[in-house]
Image 1 (tube, rainbow, N blue to C red):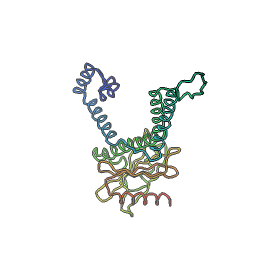
Image 2 (tube, rainbow, N blue to C red):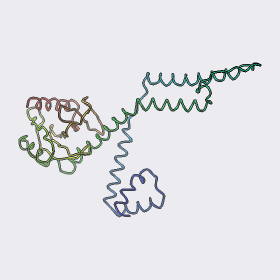
Image 3 (cartoon, rainbow, N blue to C red):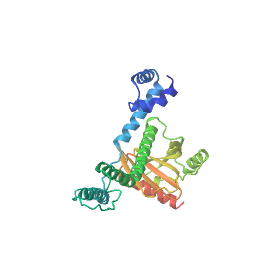
Image 4 (cartoon, rainbow, N blue to C red):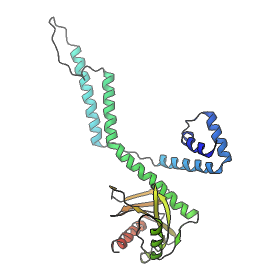
Length: 275
C-alpha cells in the first residue's frame, strides 16, 4: 500500500471497520513509513480530544413535559381502542367512526411515540450540539497551534515589538488587514506575528508576552451571522477566550490566569476602539 491508499483507509482503520488482512497491511506500512505513523498519532489524539470533550445536555423541564404529554396521548388512544373492543355485542350493527390512531396496534403507537420523541429531542439539541462540537473542535486546533508555536521554535514569522512593522508584514501575506496594537503599557508587550491556518483558512497570529508566559491571539474576519457572545474555554491547562467585533473574530490562547486573559482582552479592545 502507498501513502495515498493509507490516508483513504485511515478512518476505517481507526474505527475498527476493516477486515483483518487490510488492517495487517496498514500496520505493516505504518511500521515502515514515519510520515503515516505521525498522521495516525495526530488522528488518534484528535479523536481522543473530541471524545473527552463531547458535550452532554440534560433535558430541560419543558422538554421532559412535552415528551410525557406525547406519550400520555399515545397511551390514551390505545386505552380508548381497548375499551371499545370490550363492549358487549348488540343484535343490530351500529356504524362507529373510529380514528386512524385508535385502530393502530400498540407496537405501531409505540413506534410513533418514539419517532415524535426523537424529533423533539433532535429539534432542541442538535443545533446546540453542532455549535458546541464546532467550538470544541476549533478549541483543539487552537491549543495545538499554540503549543506547536512554543515547541517548534516558531513563535513568530516577523519578530518585532513595533506594531508598524508587524502589521504591514501580515497585511502583505493575508487577504485582510488585522488590527495590531502594542500593549506594553498594560503589561503585555508585543513580540511579533506569524501566519497560521485555522477554521479552514489562513489567519493572523499575534504574539504577546505576560511575564514568562506567551499569549497567542488568532485573528480572522468575522463570519456572517456569527454569534457575538464571548466564549471562555479551559482545557488541558490552557485558557481560551473568544470575542468578536464589527469586523473580526478573535481567539486568545495562553496558560496565564483567567483574570490576566480578561485584562488582555479589555486592553486590546480599548486600543482597537481608539485607533
